Length: 274
Image 1 (cartoon, rainbow, N blue to C red):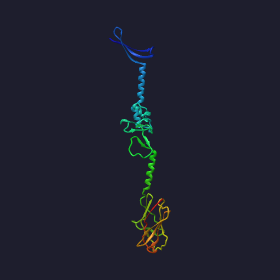
Image 2 (image 1 turned 90 degrees about the horizontal axis):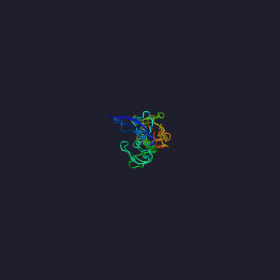
Image 3 (image 1 turned 135 degrees about the vertical axis):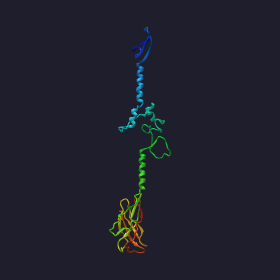
Image 4 (image 1 turned 60 degrees about the horizontal axis):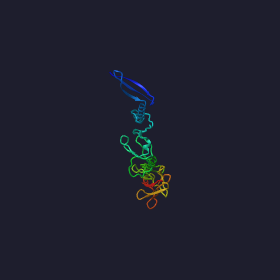
């Protein structure tokens, strides 16, 4: 029959404490002594366990980071997953395998994150793709401004109908020839015709007001264009810098001629706005 007992001990010479198991035979002689642990071994083990606990994220930590239920910025020192400090990666070009990230991460100009860091480029001169590079927010703003400028330069208002004033006896000629205007970028087009509703309108070098273009559609200076009238007659279409549109000036063929009722002075012109 084998008997045993457990004892704790303190060794004065080495200054260590521990515990062991002493095994006896039937006669009470010591057969063997099994060392359970010493104080130094125990402390080393505790230190290793604490180090492992600090080095790796447990399942709960990972779920909290991914779910982020409080919608907060969560700091993660992911480089400790393979035992290296963040400083090591910040100062060295390196690759990660697909367990951590599918891309290369290079250079110094960035902060660390789950996927590493990138080099920030503040120009648009790169002619080929480079892993780990990202365009700066400044260049993003410049590109956005350029796109806005280009978009406004080709913005199309679509056709809009001029509000023809009836006070001077004119109206849109018919539903298929209403006076309309349209702006594409800085170019304004006008089309259509008006109908003279007066009998034998006497004409001279001045025209009659028919409507006003809105702000943004007006020329910077007075402009005019010769337009077709009824028969062989012609007239001046005039637009002032304030948008005032007039028709009928100098109506006639070889000389001034009274504008007959239902006459057809057209309103076709293209011009730039500044």
